[in-house]
Image (cartoon, rainbow over the protein chains, first blue to last red):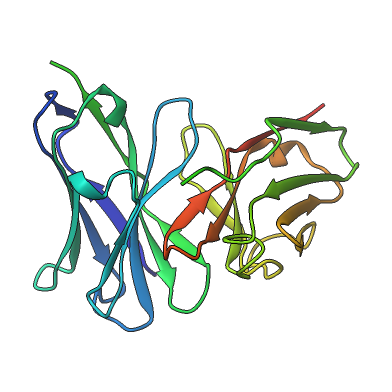
Length: 120
Length: 110
């Protein structure tokens, strides 16, 4: 059974860097069957796609966040990481990682999410 | 990129049917069949209900169905049940190699 678990600090100061990790069990982050996405949801608002890591090691980012975001993979730990620089209060959100099956629009497994608050 | 357009709210009585629309453009909904729908209950992670316009994952009730016409995708729920009350989001791939979500629809079961 595939499981995704997000982790990271719950509180980040404005202008600092947010760093989150998604630990994957039950599948390999380098499998050609899987792509890995980060998605966020500000409190009381809708879902926003942040970016997707493809098994080919290419990455697509939301254009509105691209200049501040880096997604990477640690194959030794089977983890996907998200780094977001120069955060502001607008980056306060629940952050989810999700698996998308290759060649489909199927984001079928999601982590439970981790809440990040940006505040001094 | 702009969010796909969904009605803010829809409602129906138990046993009735409802449809939620998701309107995009010829660069996303109208171009690809990578259209999916997610159900989200308060405090929970989104759950996949429909993918690739019409397909249902194993375990999802056949009361849920999807369709697409032009730049608009739709999620239909028949035989409404109290447990269907939730927020629903559509999602589409785009010609910019990005993914975009809908603005979200709150379904109320009266």
